[in-house]
Image (cartoon, rainbow over all chains, first blue to last red; front, side):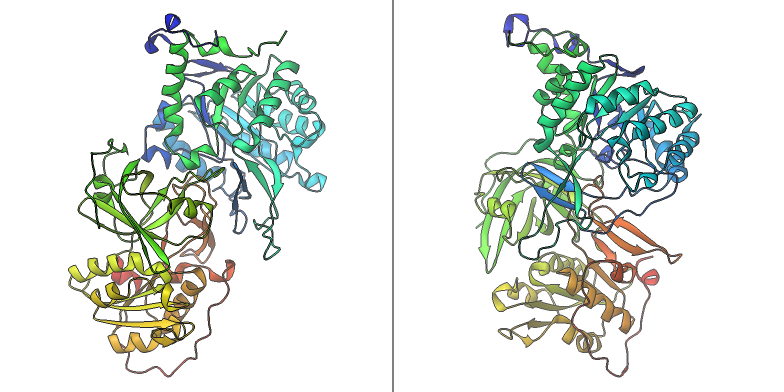
Length: 319
Length: 306
C-alpha cells in the first residue's frame, strides 16, 4: 500500500478525506495549530479558510492579556523559539468579534482555552457553552499553574485531571487536552487526561528551549525561555503521538509539531493522528494548509487509497 | 541594467482587491549600491497593489532556515517591484546569490502604507541608512500630489548613506548627516531636524530607519508638535498577522497601552502613539531644546489624515 504503483491509482475525486475527530465531522484532516493561525481572518485574505477541516483558534483567557515584551521570537536551525504570553482580547471580546466571524464561515471551530487556575479554565468554558458554531474545545494545559508555583498543568497528571474535569462539567462540545512533550512519560499524562473525561488529545505543544546572543550575553527572547517549534521537533511529535496512540487507541488525536509537507501529514496519521495541525509552517507560507488538502488527495489517489481514515495507526512492524 | 522577463510567471495566488498575493517572481535586476543591494522582481500584480510604506516577505533557501525575510518596498514601476537590503544574516547572505532570471518566492504587499495628507502641506522625510529607500517613493507620491518634500538623510558613514543622488532629485532641499562626519553634517538626523523643520515650514514628518533613531525623531517631533509617521521594525515570524511576535506597545485613545502587530496594524504608526518607554529601544541622542521661534501652522493627525 505504501509503494507508488500506477495501476492502483484512482481518481482524486474518489478519495474520501473526511475524518471523525471525537465526534467532530471534518471534511479533511488538515487543521491549524493554536497560536499559528490567529482566528482565521488574516489568512482568509489569501484563501477561503472554510476549505480546511477545522480551525483551531489562538488560546483565549477569561481576561484580556497583552502578553510579554519583545523580542518574542528567535529563529533556530529548522525551528523557532517563541514566547508570546497568551496575548488575546479575552473571551468576551473574542466571542463578539472572532467567533461571530468564524460562525459566518461555517467551518468547524475548535476553541483553545487557557487559564492560570482551574477556575479560570472553567469560567472560559462556561462563557463558550451554548454559543453556536463551536465544534470542540482544546484545553491548553501547557499554561503555568499559579497554585503550583507556575509549573505547567500538563507536567503532572493531577492538575491536568482537575482542569479537564472542571471544563467537562460545563462544556457542551467535545474537549481535547493539549499536552506538552516536556514530561518523562507523555502516555501517563494522556491516560490521566482521558480518564478525567477528555474526548481526545492534541499532541504536541512546543518544547521549552533557550538561546543566548554570544555577543551581548542576553537571552534571544525577552522571556529567557521560549517554546521550540518547527521541523526541529517533528520526530519528537511523531514519537509522542505514536506512544499515546499505543497507550490509548480510543483517544482521538490532533497530531502536530513541525508538519509542513504531505508526507509529514501521512506520517502523523500513520502513528495515530485523526487530524493533523499545521503550526509554524503557516508563518512561512500562509497558503500551505490549503495546498496540503489538495496534495493529500493527490497523494492518496496516486496510491489507490480511498480513505485517509484507513491509514490511521498503520505503523508497520519490521518483522 | 533591467532585463525584460523571459516569460510571464504563473499568476500569483490570492484574492481580488488590494490584499496580499503570493507567488514566484522573476528577478530582473540585482545590484550592489554602496553598502547595500538592490533587487527588482517582475511582479505586475503586486506592483499594482503596493503603496509606499508597505513591505514584502521573501522566501529564503538558506540551510535550515524556515522563515521569510521582510523588506520594505523601495518602489514599483513598469510592472516591477524593488527592495533594498543590507546583508546581516544567513537569509540576506543567501539572497546575495540570487541571480537575474532566478525566481523569488514573495508575498505582498503587506502592512499599512504611509497616510497621505489631505491638504497640500510641506513634508519632511527623515531617513536612517537604507531607510531612505521607501521614503524616496513616498516623496514622489507626495510631490505628485502637489506637496513640498524635504529630506534629511543620515547614516553612520558615507558608504551607508543610500541614494544620495535620488535624495537630491526627489526633494526641494536635502540635508545629509553622518555620525563620523564623512559626508554632510557631522552628527545625527535629530541634530538638524528642528532647524530643517523651521527652515522648510514642515507640517508633517515621515521617518524610516533604526528603532533608536525613530524614537529620537518621534520624541523631537512631539516636542515640536509636528505630526510624525514612523515605519517600525520588530522580529517578525510571519508578516501576515498570525504569529503575534512583532508587537509594538501603542497608546490607545483611552490612555491604555495595547500591543499591536507591526505587520498588520503597522509597520507605519503615528510616532505619538508608540509607548516608547514600554519598548526596548533606548532613548535616542539628546537634543538641546531651543527657543520656540516663528513656527509654521501646526496640524494634528486628525486634521491631516482624518
